[in-house]
Image (cartoon, rainbow, N blue to C red; front, top):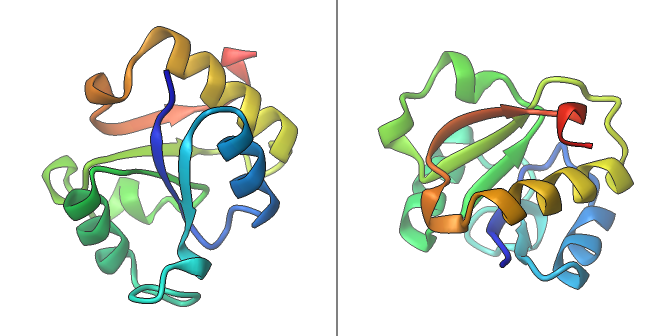
Length: 114
């Protein structure tokens, strides 16, 4: 059961194809015409609500500046050294336990899922 994901610009573009191949409906901010590289976090939050997508990010702005009602959900990776391979494995593991419709608010996540 896959997630509907929106990858922030700090997530490697290569993660998009790998997450999609793993069964997730994945968009990267860089490839969305109404967002694009440099889009504000507020625009990402709005887009995530409008499109029912979970934001995947290393950006702690979603922790400090936004309340959970301002975005659909956020998977926040505190450790920026998580590789694309690990990120995909973590998202896959989470999706096996929590279906997309149960993911809400800010979810701090990382290697504990491996």
